[in-house]
Every structure is written in C-alpha cells, then in structure tokens.
Image (cartoon, rainbow, N blue to C red):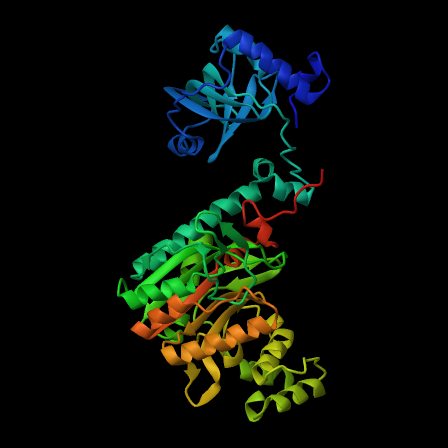
Length: 498
C-alpha cells in the first residue's frame, strides 16, 4: 500500500519516488535519521490514560508520540501511526500545525517513521487523536510496505522477510508477543518451583544426550573438531553431581542436523530440567502444573482452540503405559512375548513391516508410532518405554524390558520427554557403550564415549527425575500455529538462488 501523493511526483516507480523524497528532505531539513528523539508516551499508554475521554473533547495535555505511518488520508491531514503497542491518529490542520510541518506532509510516505508532538483529543467519531504541533522525520523508508489488509500471500517471503510479515499481519505480531510470554512464563514457573537456572556449553567436543546427527565445526586455536549441542543433558546432570543445586533447569537452543518439516527446525528451543530425589511421576505432576499455568497466562483459561479442535490443559492428564496402549489399539500383547523373534513375528502377522534385526522394544515403539501416536489429541502421558530405546532411564520394577520414562503428547505431537534418571554408574557405562557400538554400526564414526560425564557419574549422582520440553511445539499449540516456522522468528531457510 503506497501513498497516493507518490503518483504526482516525478517518477512512477515507488522506490525511486522515495529516493527522490529522501533527497528533498535532506536539502530541506538536514538529518532525516536523527540519533536523538524522546517520546513521552507510547500509543498503548495513551489509549489507557485517555480511555474515558469523551467524543469531541480536546485536552490541553501535550504529548510526544512516535511510530510508523500505516495510512494517510486527505493529503496527509490524517495519518495513523503504529508503535509496538497500537496505533494513534495524527491530525494536521493549518489552525494548529505550523506551515513548515504541513509542507513536509507530502514528503511522508506509508512506512516512514515519524515523531509527533501535540495535544490529545477525541474526535466526534470517537477516534483518539493528536493535534500535531510539531512533526519530526525519524526514518525515511525506501521501500513500500506490504498491503496491510491482505498481508503477504507468499509463504516463502513471510518466513524469509519476517519484518514484513509482522508489519502486515497482526496475527503474526501477536503470536511472537505470546511466545515471549510463554518463555518468561516457563522461567518464572521453574524459579517459583525452586529450580535454579544455569547455562551449559553450546560447543561440545563430544556430542551426546540424545540420538541425533550433529552440526560439525572446527576450532582453529584448539585444533579440534567440535559439535553444536544436540542436548544439554549430560552437562546438567553434572550440576546434580556437584551439589550446586537439587533442582536445575536451562532454556536452551539445540541443533540437530536432520529434516525440516512443519514440526522440525534444525535449530530449536528446549526447556530441560533435573530434579534430585524425584522420579518420573513427580515430573508428570510438574508438566501438568506448568502446562495449566501457561494456558491460563496466554488464554485466561485452560481450554483453548487449535485448528478445529478444543484442547484442555486442565490436569490430571491421561496416563497410559505404551504396551497397554498398543494392545488396546491392535490387540498385540507385547508383554506376553519373551523374545525379539516373537515380537517381529507378531508385528508381521498384524501387517507391519519391521526390519529383520529389530528388537522387542523397537517393534513395540514402531507400532505405537504407527497406530497410537496419531490418536493422542488431548494431552496424555505415555509411560513405560522399552529400555532398548531409552539408555538413560531406570528399569520398571518387575519388568526389566521397560523403563520409567514418559512422553507427553497432544494433538498427536510429542511435547516432552522425561525419565527416572539412571544413576548406576556401571549400568550407565554399559548402556552408553552399547549405544556407541550401535552408532558406529550405523556409520556414525564421529560418535565417541563421553568419558568426562561417566567420570562425574562415578562420583555419584543422586536419584533424579529429568525432563525436556519442546518450547516451539508447545508454543504452536498455545498460539494456534500450523507450522513451527510460524513460531520461530527466523526459521531455517534454503539459501536463495542467485
């Protein structure tokens, strides 16, 4: 959307018009991008302060506001300027606005950032306005803004040029404001619950804490390869060993060199925590309290829409062991089987294609993903995962093939992953060595044993419950966003072709 006054200027090209106006403004007023300007009130504060001002009333209160011009009417006599909190109408009339300021109106385009000093009034139509006594050009925009009402139709441009998306799309703007509230809400909740926030390295000499492909780099001074963090787990557990705190958390950026989809971005945000002298059931309670708190913060209620669904974050959530969920969905009773061969045969008999070397636990997890995961719309804790795929969790008493692990699902998405953490140093080493051998068999030659972590566990780590929550997916749910790229300000994008 561009200012109609441009058509009367020398050039018909919108960007050239703006360049010409910039030149004229430099000649007329000098500095078009001043370093110093002090507004006295934001648009949101103005709206709140004068919310009871009646129509057709002008005050003697003089204020200074600033913002980007979003609309211009009657040759600039009426303009709407927006800041981060809202809009205000600017009225420039010869009875109030000096001639020098009125002469500048034709030089102001949609998208320019201006400062205005004047008196506060409410028009006969009820519009809160400023009667301009002084207008200051703060930033001349050299490119036209996108159409405010239609926004940006091209999805690629929305993600690649997020500044334009937010300028033209109030929904996007609100979503990122809500994301900020969600992040601060998580931090406040954890601190109020007695957790201490720490920071752990993002550059690792040995990658681990999760099964994923890392991003690899090289440190010139140290003359060694390093890896961007795929998880902070092994460092956070070392803080429990140290006795620094019994309840630790980190809101962190992780990097996994894997696929991109509506639910996956190579760089993503996690909240990970560890709680000494607690177990996975304590962590389930914590997740329910946290989710309920965040829903109330964002929506004012624990019920909220996502697409055509109504989601409830009111606890307690459904809790179901994975073998029970698979048996209910398929009739296959994995707990009745004794060997890997039986599990593979049962899966094949039910029509599932499984690999010839899959274990009992891998077959169970695969059928769960195929038949159960997609049905978990309301928040649910799926418990008792196979030990085969859970190298850091304690065994379920009486059933050594399963561990005290749960994942929280909602809208068929995994939102969180938690364990009763393994703290037996000999068992931990055995499982990590086994995991390393499997990685090497898959061709992951860079994978190494984290001896520093194992040395710390040998020192003694208290029993603990651990949790990782995907902040991006949680934000998607709470803000009704269909893609993870809608909740990450600057998502990963393929480089533009020349």
